[in-house]
Length: 496
Image (cartoon, rainbow, N blue to C red; front, side, top):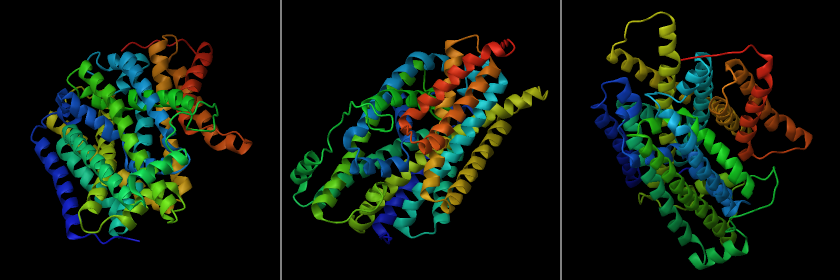
């Protein structure tokens, strides 16, 4: 079922897309160097960095799937996870941020080059590039499904339109355009969520009091579960420890996030943005989980059968119950697109940065190209890198249409492996000096094998480990195996 968008809804979308491109055009006037394009001249205000961090980690899957979690069995117990996120952020500020502000680093992976050597830098960059572009291509596909449902466009057109507009404003204005657009997109999808709360409540028989009584009666508002069950992702321990390690990986070693810290005006401002983002993310989860609880009350009290999949319940409500041609459908669609495009734009810019600084420039130097590349030529080539990664993600998004939902879900999980593996390598680099490059690479390979076993082998043996523990498994195996094989390998020393 599709909703023909009315003139007001179309106007809302046009204004949103026009604003995104206008920000890119405005930011383009300040782009003269590679540093300006990839790091915003390291001069972004802390609150812009904050908005960019939050919007970047919030994809369309978050906006649509998180309500499905609270609609289902999780309820508000999902909020145990962002508690772990905050703990992980504190560890990043204490242990990792000082590494990134020691000198003039351009990427997170340069820390690994200085500690282990150029091979580790390139291996980490390759892992980042593959995982990031596979995962974000699939996220583009998931957002395009909603776009298709609301507009009736063919899926390939939906993927292509979203991808093309995101590429355009990212190529034009670089990180400065991405960060300011992230702030705009954060406002839009939060506003869309708030509007959805009131629209859903107005459709519930009995209104707010009935919704509250329903939530209490069905245990939807309980936040803490102190049971210990590795198969249950919604326990206090999975949220606190699994969430903390996951956040350490995604926000501490993933270059898409590290790039935001490097664009701040200094370490103190980067820390302020990162820590405050934990509070904003927690409140954001409260909003979208609240939507799921209200949807549960709507279906439970109104007698209307919900969709078979909980993660479709919010999108289905938008399609079937939002007022037509009032601008609200256009606002919700803009909110979903904003959440998707903020992640994709950040991914494109970070991928171009990593390819330029971790792969292309080092290989150019290794080949004996000693002459300095003209700033204009370096900038132009990096912009082409951005376009290329955008095309890759569009291709992945279109190809995902031929997969079933289980394959997409598993591919997204695999794309998240990099957080644990890179965290393990960073721990080896920071906490020990005796582990060399070869041992670290062997450890990372073992960590990858362990994660594949946890996801695909153990369930067949009757053992299930919930996804919040994956980053802890990957990082722990990487560290332990690297330490064990170190005495078996030749002693290595690398000095940058």
